[in-house]
Length: 143
Image 1 (spheres, rainbow, N blue to C red):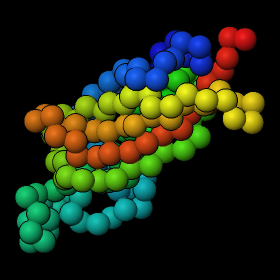
Image 2 (image 1 turned 90 degrees about the vertical axis):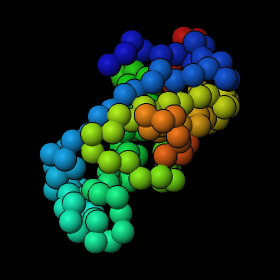
Image 3 (image 1 turned 45 degrees about the horizontal axis):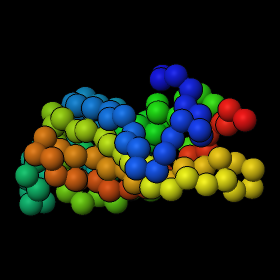
Image 4 (image 1 turned 135 degrees about the vertical axis):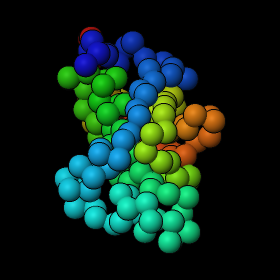
């Protein structure tokens, strides 16, 4: 985990350090078991092809988890992930290199918490945004 991030260290427009992920078929099977999402499009190539897909695709909720990791790795142990949302725009396949990115869009204090709002997303190797999302985090203050 990265060093602790403080509210005073962040400015609107600041980029979240990227997180690169490369999934495997094994990881998708493990995720299916852990999340109880056993839809065959995530692990059975013939089934996925039969449904008109280009092959096995990564679970949307796994991509959301990657975005959650992006944020929690960045904010440090004393930071708090308050809200996370994700919208799946394109399919990704096992073996694809996915790059999770983010940018701070708002900084404010609410109910005594030092909060940031961020746009977050996942890009494929072609630079296309395949998953869009947002996050709200609370950070400790140096003051």
